[in-house]
Structure formats: C-alpha cells, structure tokens
Figure 1 (cartoon, helix red, strand yellow):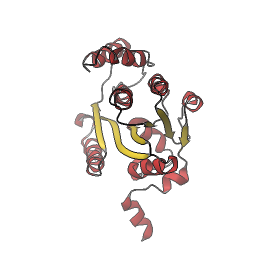
Figure 2 (figure 1 turned 135 degrees about the horizontal axis):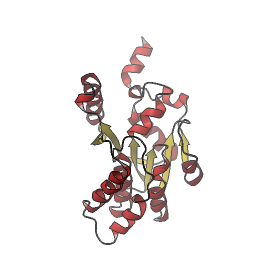
Figure 3 (figure 1 turned 45 degrees about the vertical axis):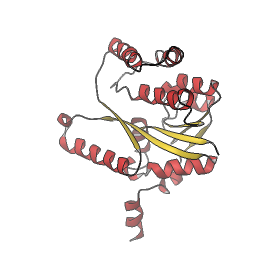
Figure 4 (figure 1 turned 30 degrees about the vertical axis):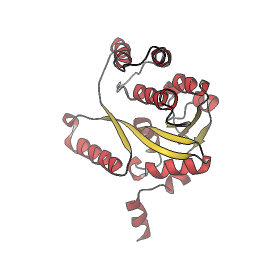
Length: 215
C-alpha cells in the first residue's frame, strides 16, 4: 500500500470551505482518512500549514485560533505556522531567496528547490510564506527523504503547480483535493484531483457536531 502524507494549505482551506460551513466544524483527520480510504493509500501524516495572527489584531480572534491549533495538535496533526506579514513584491522575492538559502540543502537538491519556488506567482495580499513551506516540505518528504509515495495537497491554489510538476516528474504520485469553489483550473487540468462536495464535508464534522445533531 502506498504511503501518503497530507499537506493542508489552511488559509486556502478556510476561505473555500466557509462557503459551505464554518471551517472549524470540519475534522481534517476525517477528510484525510476518507481520501486515503477512497484511493487505497496508507495515511502516514497530516501536516497543517497556517498563518498565525498577532494578538494586536484582536485577542478574541488570536486565542480562538490558537485554541483550534492546539486541538489539531492534540489530535495528532503536525502544525507548521508562520506569522502574518505584509511585504512588497521585492521583499517577497528576497524572502523566498532567504528561505531557500537557509534550508542548508545539498548541491543536488538546491537547484530543484530553486527551480520550483523562484517562479511562484507574486501574492497580491498578505504574504505568509505558507505556500513556500508547503511546497518545500512536499519536495523534501517525497523526493529528498523518500518518506512518502504520494503527496496529497488540500488546496486549490495554482501557486503549487511548479512544485507538484517537479514531484510528478520524479515518479511520485500527486493528488489535490478541495471544495468546488476556488479550485484552480490548472490544478484540475494537470494533476489527479478529488472534489470535496458538501455531502462529503457533512460526513466529516467534528465529534461535538455529531453529538449535537444526535440530541
């Protein structure tokens, strides 16, 4: 059975799922287990990549967010976070270069990473570095460390196309998953995908939601 690691772009997940339900009501572990069951993969790990707001942006929002991350961590999900930042286009380019330089990659790996990330589209809003970390980890875990056979990306963002193409060219499997809204046509065209429809999400509510419905 092929080993799969789930990579969740939490920001993209939140903004698309909220068109159906409150995103926090959905159990990402159930989503991951569902995808692996359907595709007959062995679930190795779930990795949640999220930006963390500043407490200055509002205590209620901050503590609610941190409480949710703790819930995920306690349930066995690997949490990777970055603080929200506002950067100019030039700052974004420099930051991407700095991130790659600080990875301490070998001579063979660094060109692969640079080829994938330095041509990622520039972000118009808040740059968090999340997309870069997701892409780097997908390449690292699948190609460099050979820890999985399949990368399952929960995101509809076309920024991941270069990294996914590199992974595919190295004979690793790719699967993207997202609700119908905000799903990049380029992702749908170039890689295997799974559309998470409303009925599927309803079957993946967190336990407390199930209990409420049962009362």
